[in-house]
Length: 210
Image 1: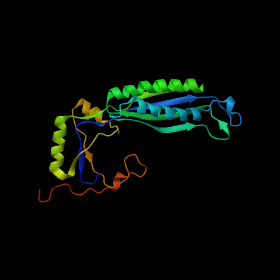
Image 2: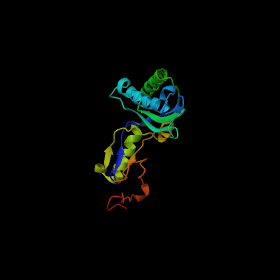
Image 3: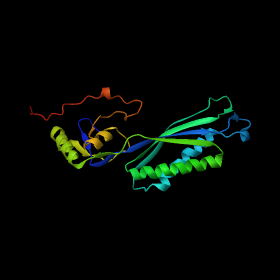
Image 4: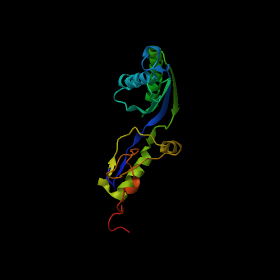
């Protein structure tokens, strides 16, 4: 979003997030004797693919939901099949009932992959952020304030996103609204090249005002 612009939308705006972790225990061994081992890397790869089917086949495509993995670690090389592997990621959704569907089906998929491969798979889940809801009254106030500062044409109605933010907890305790501020042509948030210090915001005060 260009610098000097603001974005805001009423209703569910940021997703609820759950952190999920998997510990896969196989049977370590030698690359030359794979039939005597249970490769946790292969099990983890199957698990990643199978879990993506949860979104494809169990969540209404009209609903917004996401499942992504951020780490996969196993072994240290040297022609060795590792004993264990660790996998982690996040579930994201704009409705609690969708989160529940994903959680329940993930547990069933994990049990199925464990049975097929012979590995032991432990899944743990931790609630991260709740859904951030921009309340109607507070959204109208924020929209009016942004338009008063930047002008009608500089305020956008933004769609929901599947990122999570702890402002959701504040908005639950005290009704509020989360507003976007344009950061200009830069790398996206959480990207390695993101640097908020390079942004130079122009004066938002309308010309001629005091």
